[in-house]
Length: 65
Image (cartoon, rainbow, N blue to C red; front, side, top):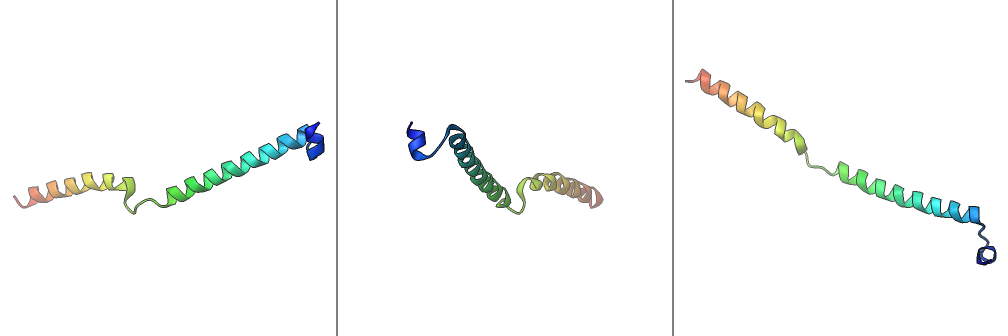
């Protein structure tokens, strides 16, 4: 009865709730995307450079010894 006074039928109410939920999820997605683009310059790629630098240093130490 209250739904009819407000003007919301059962189908409209669920559609409104779904639209509201979609908006919430899109806001969360935007926050996550913004967070992923704010990573540092090196990030996890620095862990690739460490062994490469160690191999280069090992090779140079063998050349000059």
